[in-house]
Structures are given as structure tokens and as C-alpha cells.
Image 1 (tube, rainbow, N blue to C red):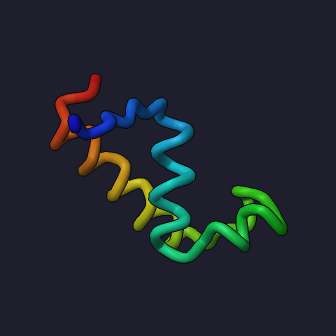
Image 2 (cartoon, rainbow, N blue to C red):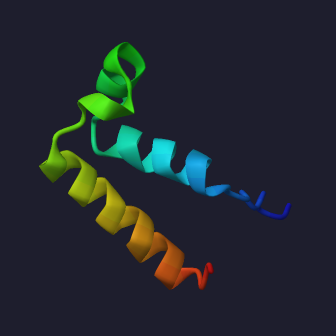
Length: 57
């Protein structure tokens, strides 16, 4: 059986990576604006790294 390939939009990717970092509950409770600059930077770096690795944009 073949593996199912997941296709991401940037928003889905961002949310999934935020959950991996442990920010999911905070985002659901208070919104994206409640992330600290350090948390936002870490998340942005992960999104950028994923996009570069998979040749997005």
C-alpha cells in the first residue's frame, strides 16, 4: 500500500508546527497575537526551514 501524501497550505503548516512546539493550546485559548516574540521567531524559523527544504515559493 502507498503512503498518503499530505499537502499543506502555509496556514495549516504553521498551525501544525505550532502544535509540535507546544503552542497549540495557547493559540486556541488566546489567539496568535499572544505568542511572545521568541515563540513567533522560533515558529517562523521552522516554517521558513520547511518551506526551503520542500522548495516552496
